[in-house]
Length: 374
Image (cartoon, rainbow, N blue to C red; front, side, top):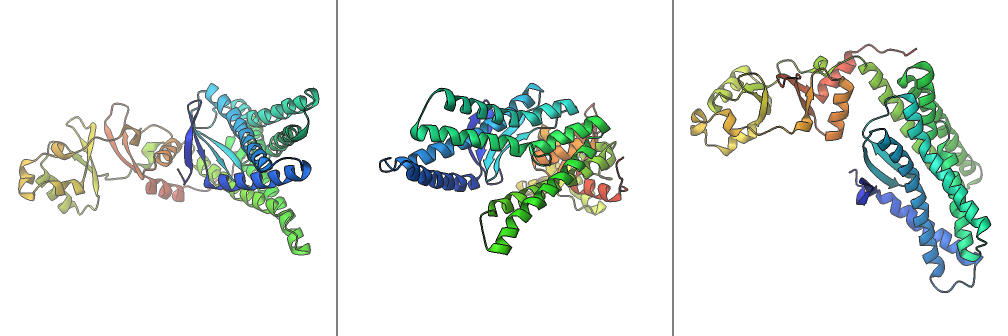
């Protein structure tokens, strides 16, 4: 999963950490441990470093709680949470799909910052009412501050931050167009990205100071991801109204199960086909399997005339089949989630319609006129 390391499951949700997480874990452990050693010089031996590690883990626990906030609201809406991943800049809850309404999207987006601000309030209350002192009080205070920062930072109204998703939901509600919401939130996100980059570069260029170098990294992250969101929204809008049937490949590679391998090879030779895999149907035209050319190597050529396609074909994974009247956008999401280059297309009765290739969708997009949403 993009180099991420699975470390288990939380409430049935796969939990991953990106290798960059270990870098931040080490930096936070060292820097805060060093700060505790200076603040509390009586701490023995490795105690400051151990407390620094505990603080770092609690910091990422706060990020995890933030992502679980999003996840629980999504699950309540019937949306599957594919995974939660911790990485250099925080965390990411990967959802199966977006919410169906702007109100539902709003509640998923705001849940994360709400959890962070709630944790800040709880930790602050503990600090004031429990009269704790020493390193424990310092750790409680810093965790409260971190959760406050996490909540407020994510409320910045630009994608890919939660505030951007909140803005998207609001614009979607007002205009009735979810893609316009993405466009506006992406523009705002890119604006904040440029501001963050400038605040990181200017001290470096003018004074040779690296104090704001973290802003440069955050700005680059915002700029890149906001741009991707806008690009995907444009693709989504251009696909609106199109169905899977609109992108089925003409003259898809289809054969019947009752012909021999020899007949199959002869047909392929005469047609000049370069397909490496063929969809197989029964007499009624229903999809029953697929046959790859490489499979022919498993049988001696002198047996081809006596061997039916049905004997050599293999079954098709159901997740790579889609119904022809489904939205084309759903097919793209299925292609991406299953990491395949083509889907088999049938009608609702299982009758094979043809093959949908990722390349055909790209060609269709290139032929579609560019539109500007109102």
